Length: 335
Image (cartoon, rainbow, N blue to C red; front, side, top):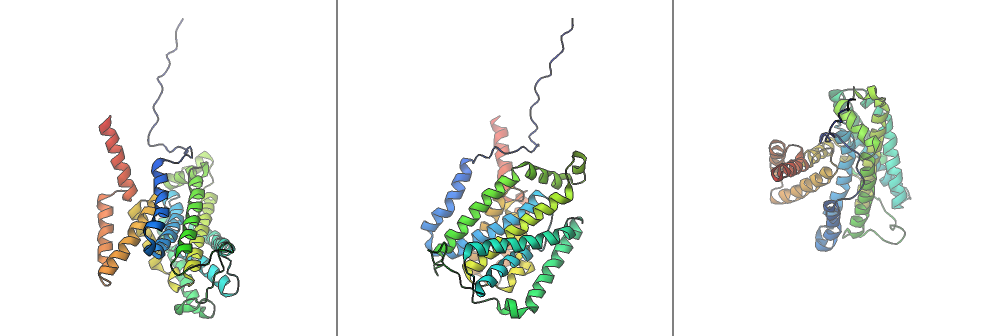
């Protein structure tokens, strides 16, 4: 009688991606306590703070397609601009209710993202860069030519918002704008966190790592890419709508290439495919921009460029990547 040998239990490969249990870690809770703390501790910087929160939401939308699905884009500002102009035009023409305006801004940008996605997802990285850049430039020039609607280079003024929830008026100090932006960012972050940690989010990582292999396990590549591109465009539109509502002005630069390029810099600084990298990279970039431009309004971009070079050379995967590498190194020493 032979006894079958039982194989020892195999240890899990740390390189595999697993579904998250959905629980919040203590460091995450501490992180999300910082924006409310800044409201009370830094009352003189609430306008800058609301801008950081809005751009952080915009950066998260790009991270969905770049960091998780591996779809590169140089024209993501197109959807940001669609959302901004939608919310702005609604207010100019008599509908200044913030929440419905924000939803419509996201819906219009999502429709635009859905229509564009069929051109973007069928190409490779270089063609995607060119297509998205071209679409962004087309929309920029279209908005410039349609000055009777958008205000052209003078911008869209006369954006008058109603009271938030019918109670809270937008003030010059930016208190309501800050709380409004913080609430929208946190709500959408929770939804996106749930999305990227779902089976659908796990399949997006598979597309990023090897889109040609995914059909072998029955995953429809094009439909998933179209879906995430549409979602990301909608989130970018909400961020644009937030900007229009809180500043009560829409400038032509919301559609410009520099805004898309700066967004990529923020993601590189923070780290792609990690969500918190988008938030940290945005805060670091915008605070550095505010401080350096105050020191020297002409040559401040030199220092931003130097910061980017240092991050690429010495922080592989951005700030979040460097922190993760340090944590793994410390774990190895403990063992």
